[in-house]
Length: 461
Image (cartoon, rainbow, N blue to C red; front, side):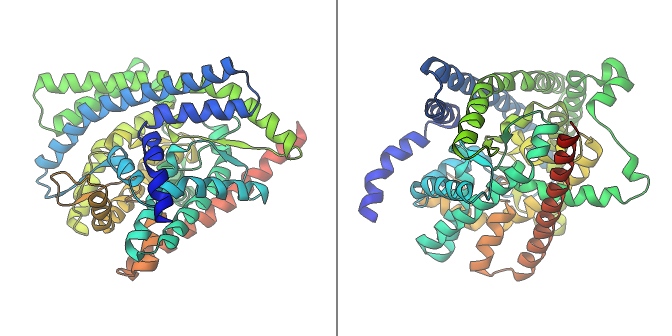
């Protein structure tokens, strides 16, 4: 087994090192050719998707380079003693792919997907191979805790099953709110955080007065005119963050224009991805439906597709300073050590599906998102030591003695799996598990209700 892993590890790690902007287009091209698309159309679709992801990377880089330092300065201004830096997914994904579990994780996750499709347990056909790193991270931490390679693989399997089911359960949100016909977002922070938003939405529905509050960017634009436009909202948010960071006038204005640019550019860079996906999703539905007796299928893709929505962008920008404030509250309540940093630029991933669950209501998103980020930060504190071992094993620790992350390091799925074997904090495990599985049960019930509604509307049409 070890000899086999040593043989296949270098080429696979080379492919993974290409990153999602190259790896995903290559997978899409191969997938498109398998579906029967002509070579020219397949390459065009793959390259358009690659262009879109490079665009997203540029915009996220702009957020990281401008808003990241501002958030760090905010934390310093608040006098926070947060000694563990959040590496974010850009730092966590490479060390995960360098783990021993990673080489087997990709075929395992694909096999799980194929088995679930064959048994009609899911409609999701996952082509986003890069984001299998989420499932791999769970397996890698279970492997570290138990020392068992097979239990690590079990961690990959469990996370994979939940991921594909999340794609099914939130398919109507992906279609009806984001307008992504035939697409699912089965993994990433958007998927596993969504059950928390379902709980909050149900609670808010039952609170008189509160259940009537509905704020979104479209309503703001109508009420405020030009001052409600996304680019001006972004400009104002940039000013607020700059002031909280203690910047001078020049720095505040530079930050404000940068945030305004993010508000404008993010929806633009999503468009090439949608253009590339259209022929793929249509061909996939036709081919798979014909092969599997007319069944419906969903193409599983990266949650970056959700970042082009104006309400997601607005809420994501609001949560940059809010997450730092929540981290400050955490340092006072449970001794939080993690300074949000690497994932601040992609905080929209955490709340994107929640925006859809709340039908674009930013007021509700702020409440559910605060709940999500508090739990995420709490969990990330519990996995710091394990992630540090993961970094050491990958020779990626650098000059930091401890490292952490919000993305995956704060995942309830990972935390529950690790604690089942580690059993260090049984009270924490019980609380998180109870809340999360209530959220999953409510998510399933909500999905069945939306499914019945969809069938009824289809019959009437």
